[in-house]
Length: 292
Image 1 (cartoon, one colour):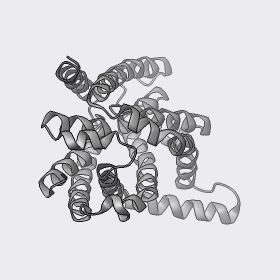
Image 2: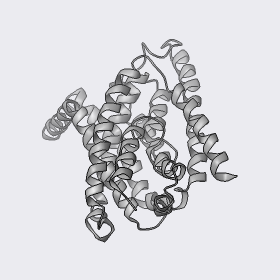
Image 3: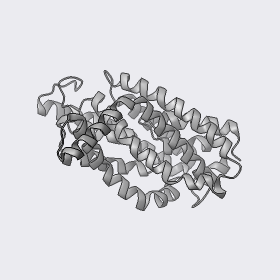
Image 4: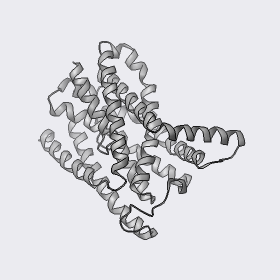
C-alpha cells in the first residue's frame, strides 16, 4: 500500500539520490526493503505495477527541478540552437553546448527505449541493487584515480580542480562517449550523475564542469522517460495513488532543487571520493543484509 507517508519518504530520497552520485533507482529498491515495505519491493520488479507508475511522477518532479535550476542555461542553449538552425551552422558556444547534449543523449535514449523495462524488472531486487551500488562505489573511486592520471598527463595539474578543459572544448565524439556512460544507470545501483561525471573527468573536465554537464545531460533523459510513461500513471496503474504521486513528486522536486544547488557548489572544490566510500559501505552492508 502506498500511503502519503511512504510517498513523501520515497520522494525525498528520489530527489536527493537522483542528483547525488549514489543511484536513485538503487535506493528506490533498497530503502523500502530496509524498512520492511515488502509490497513496494515486490512491485518494483513486476512488469506492471502501481509503484513503477508512482516513480514516473517522481522523475518528472526531479526533471522539472533541474529545468528550473538551469533555466538560464536552457534558454541560452535553445536560443542558440534555433539561431544556428536558421543560419545552418553552429553560431555560438551555447549552440555548440546544445549540440553536444543532443549527440550525448542519443545513445542512452535508444538503449533506454529498448532495454530499460526489462533491465528494471530483472535487476530491481535488493541483493542485485546492493551489488550494483557497491560497483558504483568502485566506479567513482576508480574515476577519481583515473582523473588524476588524465589531469597530470594533459598538464592540468595533479589536483584536477583548476586548469582543466572546458565543456566547450569537448568534441562530438567525446560527448557521445560521456553519453554512452549513462547506459550504466539502467542497472539499479549505478548512478546516472556519478557515472556521467566519471566520463567527463576521463575527458579532462574538472569536477565543476563534469557535474554541470552531467546535470544538463540528465534533464532531457529524465524528463522524456517520465513523460513517456505518464500514461501508466493516468491509466489503471495510477488508480488510488495519484494524490500520493503528486505529493511525492512535489517533495522530489524540492529535494532535487536543493541537492543540485548544494552539489554545484560542492564540486567547485570537492571530489567524488566521499560518495564512492558511501556506496562501498552501504552496498556491502546491504549485500550482507539481503544475501545471507
